[in-house]
Every structure is written in structure tokens, then in C-alpha cells.
Length: 280
Image 1: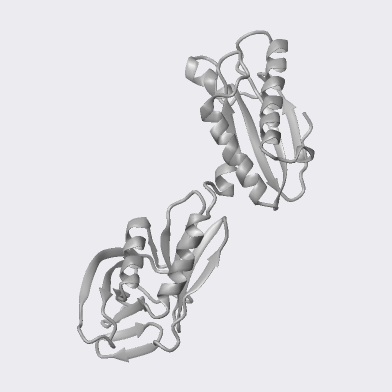
Image 2: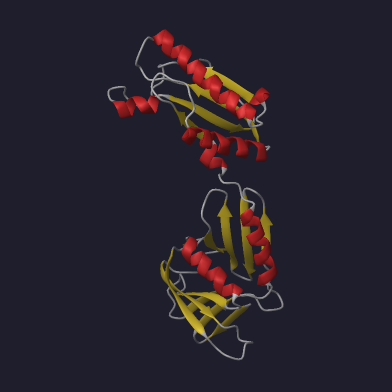
């Protein structure tokens, strides 16, 4: 619905056109409502991250600054009520409002109570009238239940969080510590859930303590130990490329204990698409 009066312009769905859409996977949960003539409001949560809200616009409609966020009783209810949820930042553009988890959860709670959620802000062109952009609770309950079901099935991590993983080791040893096996468990879980990941490169490294030949052998043992662990968790061995480099590629100086600890590592790289291995 696009309505205009002396007070300003309002964008929100009419009751008979209100839709809530859910897109669900183990990687991401998305709950959205199209807003006619404006864009859409989106509640989004990626695996391994907190939920947030995005207000998307087909064109710049709101002026940079702060918008008033309120929960209001729909006009068809007999008793009018309104709750102030606060002032929220607005940035002129196609995504004028981005809200973090706390406010996003408050908005969901108000919609679940049957309230409309409305943003009020001056228009981008500098007019005196305000612009209201609203989400309606019509048809919300069923979609919200599906969204909550999706949240329970999200993976604990997303691709960005595991695409480059470092596993660290004690000095001169190749044993995997519990903190590091937990990392590997998350990597293995993600790999098995995402068929788009087609190859995994495992690189073993050491610090500069000891002889180079010994360090090369130690880096091999570390890399192969990580590969065995992942294979034991169900990762396809045919997709694993294992390499070892000794002390050749430090990520930090070897001048002190903390720096050496950063170099005692195995790195795991996940690749989507064709894998090209650089020469060693």
C-alpha cells in the first residue's frame, strides 16, 4: 500500500496482499516481507552468526540520519497502542537500515504479538513530510514458525569461517590438542554439508627451532595427522591435497615464544570450484 496525506507517505502491505516468505537451509535462514512500491524487510541469520534485520529499498527513499522505530496496533484492532523501540541509524541508499540482533529480535517479538513495526524518517529529497515504512503481522505466525524451525538446523559455522582454518601445535610435537580437534570437527561438519566445496588443501608448517630436515619431517607429520583426522570424520580422502614445508613459510618472526607459536601450524583451505595447486 502506498498512502499519502498531509503528514507524509506510508509504504506497507495491505492486509489482503501481505505475504511473509521463508527461505531455509542449513547455511542460512531468511524471513522477509515484500513492501509494495518500496522494497522488502528481511530478517536474516547465517550459520555461525547472529541474526540481523535489513530494510531494502528499490531506490533511495530515506534521508541519512536517524529513523524512529515503533510498534503500532494495526488499524483494524479496536484499541490503539504504540511502543517506541528507539532511534535507528539510516544511510541513504538501497539498504538504508541494518539492525543487529537485539533490535531484530524485538521487532520479531512485536510482530508475533500482532503489532505493526514502522520506521519513520524524512524523505531523501528534503521534503517536510515524513516517510513511514512498515511491516504488517498479517500471515506472520506460520512463516515465523518455519523460520524458527530453520534456526534450529543451522550449521555452527559458515563457509567464510572455515574456508581458511589454522590448527596450532605444541613445540616439537604433532599431537592435536582438544581446542584444535574442535576446530577440525567444525570443518568436517561443514565440508559434509556443502557439496559446492570440491577440494581441500592441507599445509604443514613449523617454527625455526631445530634442524631444517627435522622440521620438514615434523611438518609432514602434522599435515598428515590433520588429514587422517578429517578422513576419520568422513571427509573424502580423494579431495584432500596434503603438503608440508617445514619452517619455509613463517607467518610471524621466530624471535619470541608468541611468534613461534603462530608458525607451528597446519592450514586448511577449502575450495569451491576447480582446484589449482601451486608448485612447491
